[in-house]
Image (cartoon, rainbow, N blue to C red; front, side):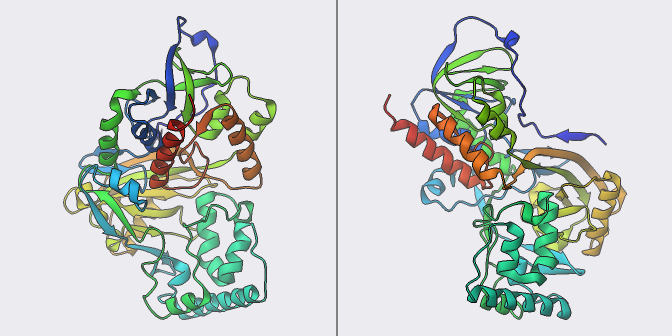
Length: 455
């Protein structure tokens, strides 16, 4: 089965022969990309003159939904969290949405363990639980003795959770997610995404269910129809007059202040907002100093290969997603859209996303068989004949790697771009690990900053 890459711009290179000639169309503000960050910027710019250049025939970036044979598929899990009051007021009613209480588990030792693992040890086998508690106690005593918090993610995990929790979940799961050893990245990405319970909370979670609703994603919002793409489409409708589709930017000339698209058209700008992946933006720059180009080449990200999977039968024991830390399993996470929103699959069927481990070769037929075995182990027998949709897809940039070069490389690029009047925003434009709401917030803040700048 052929790999179907998700349509996201990668560095296309610059070929001046494509230039169509003629006068440049000049625009006050050009926004590269009509994903959430780009459209939020456009919306908040309001009547200020702007143009959004989008390479695809539709807006949304990674926040779109496909339907096939009655099954709905987002680009893996896109569950919306709206905490910022202003963002909630502006975007919370774009489409009717339902507030959903998270149902997620970790499959470990043949059991479904509540998420987050580190504060919900209750249902582990007794010997495994005791090893985790002993490691957590030792980590607690080291912290109490004044041990400094380390910078590497692997050491950070040991510092806060101890060896048992690291061995049982944190190390194997994150190895599969990032595709690199835990100490090859820093803990800077964690922020709100990895709950850090204290020792007392870990003890509580070993004997009670009190910690099952912890974590930033304990609840989420989701459209009552149309998948997450319904939310994006409603936003697109508000800014569509400013979007020029099929206009993939392939070159940026910061000193002369113009961009060139793949069709050869050039657009002059006074201000430029780019949501293209930062690494790709550096590759588009004309006349950038060597140190900026070199810094861009040091930026790394993990791609993700995933499946859109539509099957007959109700799966995952009603859970919205399940983490798979076991090294022997090819996937690190299974999610079920239809367990959160039944309309995402035909009656009695399930619509899933299956995220595959990074950094290892995958035989897709074997991986699919393994996934079906996991579904069977969770109470639903799904044979190959029950698979009605199977699409293999890829996100070229999925998770930015916070490695040793990350901070200096990103800072060098962002500072130089800022000095040239270019705002690089969004999850991949900012080259950070963040959420959909963060993209909306960054678009708002960028627009407000631009509107207050002197002409």
